[in-house]
Length: 115
Image 1 (cartoon, helix red, strand yellow):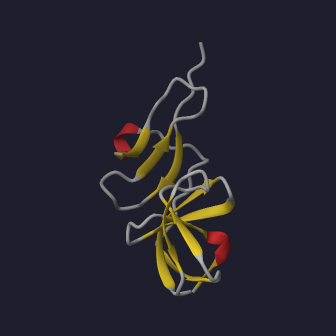
Image 2 (cartoon, one colour; image 1 turned 90 degrees about the vertical axis):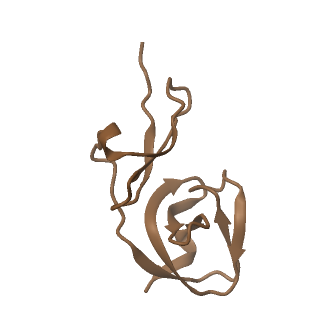
């Protein structure tokens, strides 16, 4: 019997629970959430993002509850301002997703440029 392990979707360096995990479809795991470093073994696929700032390039950019368009919206950014990204992840609907430092959620980095 093959058991699918959860997938690491984001890493937030310096946090008490730095790894964000989701269950893999069809697998035996139902894990979802942030976990302690001692509970996971990180392979070469996981890459940590260091904190950096971005300028929003879209007129309106949705803030998502998770890293993907399959997550609901949690508001939007309409000011084209500068925001701090504390973690990166892959996900549906964008090349890469960035987690906002404010905790408001995730944005598509396709509509942001590093400053």
